[in-house]
Length: 380
Image (tube, rainbow, N blue to C red):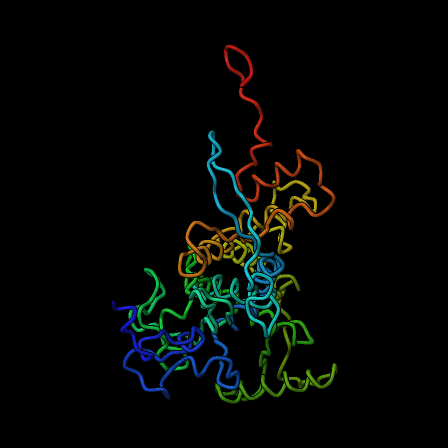
């Protein structure tokens, strides 16, 4: 009888309105969803900008994000065929090609991977839902503008229940939280990044000097105090920056040091820190141009595989498994990023290579690809 006694006020609200509903206990003006897509209020993180000013970190980030950004979404269901589980691929959902209708898929995936790499977590806001309640549109939220009241970091223990965006609370059910298995680069590598920045600043100082390093020595006359010596050195350096000719009297002489240009540019130290940055980003050093003894020649195919296995795979898995949760797609379905097409797009199209690529991409081989198993009574 309850069905016949239901009034109009008992009907469910539209799905889109629910996606932009207020946080429990918050006023409409304090709803963080109202700040979404207000780009004038978005800010950049100075710590991330400092880390990306290190060329090795920037190169590592670009390599990983460019790979993740070019992947396409697929979904499948696992089915038991009597011997093992096989993947049955299903038609794509409406948002697979363009999760955010205002930007490209490459943009939202690249920025998601960047946040996972730099901060250890990333966020999407659900801006629209289908009639069945599942999301149909998303938008990327910069992790540096997100603050979680129940977790201050840098260790993230799980999804947050108290999310604020631009200082306003967000409805948790309308925020997709991606958690990386690796810690954020700007947290784990803060010491190494600072060292690399100091070495880079020191090399920049030496690069602006037009003459070999040295010192001025007073050899006669009335002794000068510390301030007078400092003023003389500053005036001498300023004069040499404007002209290659300088003049000294008989009481002062200039002594050059024996440092080599490579020493002044800190080449070996900066090379070592570049190797440290590659380790920090979890990618092979040769991908960022650092030579390491013992590495043999790597072709383009091997380079892509190494980039995926060592650098991008943890982030890709975090994105896939988060979007495969029952709050995003129906139960029993799994979302994956098509890594195989990226790794083996150079003509490796025969059956054996496709089988190898499927396994290399983390997928299970198809039933037809499973070789027959020899038994005592014959072949099964």
